[in-house]
Image 1 (cartoon, rainbow, N blue to C red):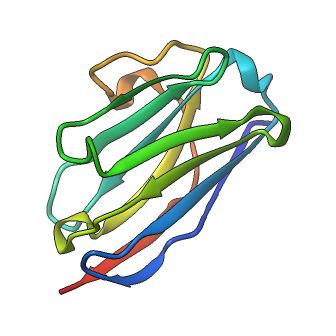
Image 2: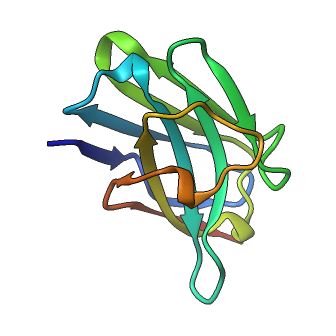
Length: 125
């Protein structure tokens, strides 16, 4: 059974940082791409980052490029999303997803069949 467990969300002031973690089990980690999505109330779900764990190739949405960094620790089957310079517009429920695909520049939910439960990030102004 594939399981993805996110952690690290919380409340932070604007300009602050958080690091999210996604621990994966039930998959051959290096065969999968791990992506991060977020959804704010009343807004569409947005794919913001992905990493192909076998070669470290990464992609980011324009909304987070330069502020967020995704990385993987293959020995721990864990992917991290370092989020810096947070803005109230980053407030959302953040989801970790995985599938047996390669990351692509356009990060779309159709590519990912395994989803975590999400972790809330709230940025206060």
